[in-house]
Length: 388
Ligand SMILES: Cc1ncc(C[n+]2csc(CCOP(=O)(O)OP(=O)(O)O)c2C)c(N)n1
Image 1 (cartoon, rainbow, N blue to C red):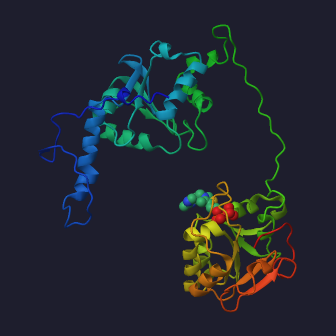
Image 2 (cartoon, helix red, strand yellow):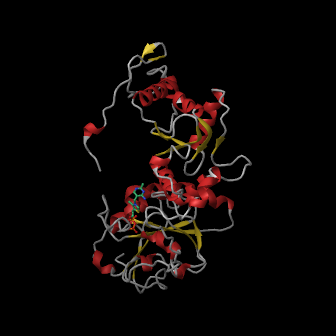
Image 3 (spheres, rainbow, N blue to C red):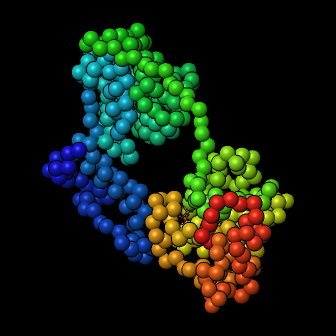
């Protein structure tokens, strides 16, 4: 990787007049119409114009390949540019041979906003345009708008071909092997050269091996083995944390589950769902790291909404999923029961491998039940060992 700061020497475009004044960037540290009367105009118009002027002045968008008058113009950006070059190489056309193949490529350095002059000039220099980009037609849609305004009549292809059939796939990864068939459809002359020996070496495609699949599971001794066990037929919610692996475990095939939530939103979908479904109750797994980070808000919201939910908090004193870091601001277990009680949680049960570890003076919240691993009715079906 070249990290030399001098490899890029940005130059401010001179003489850019925007909104009747020479352009000067104004940082916005204030909000509100009283503070910045023309804020919207600045954000949606002036700054974008300045960005275009900058991109044009510094040559961020580059053209490679054939000279103007080329049969095909390819518009692409970033990684896809290299996939396009690789696809051409796989079809027997090296970067140096693009000109002979009648291919001109516009490699966008900035995909939004498009620099109108650059794309209109490029369109005027080719017979037909194809936009090759991964996923949805982001550049393609904008490009069509720009060319339409400029009254360009150059045909633009992209996600669909002229007959409306899929050309550049929207789904999945777009790598060189997915780009190559797009190119051969546009330039059929390339097709027969696929797999042809080049420079003495021949690329061979190996068959894709489909190994037998293996469901993930917890390590033996991991407390999640026990903490993710739920009563038969229960509706279960997962979220962010190692408990999320329960969705993929072989033993949980057929589990009735709600989809996982983002971190801290464990149980939150239930506040919206509960009033509209016959299901009376959900069991929601949540880690102590997540609870300390933001999950307390989910508990508070559930209490406020008055929904019937059992949060199953695994107290493993670690942010296990991301590598076993310490939980910042972790309360001890008795303090956690007091906090949950203060939030208005109606019933709090502690299942501990060894309840004695908390001592007789532990300051539990009022009404807390503390059970040992064997005595807890909620842990009866479990296996493995859990600290708490
Ligand atoms: C907002 C946000 N920050 C960070 C992460 C990365 N992350 C994934 S799981 C996780 C926490 C896991 O810890 P815990 O809740 O204690 O569950 P455990 O894995 O120990 O069961 C974090 C921080 C995330 N998914 N979302």
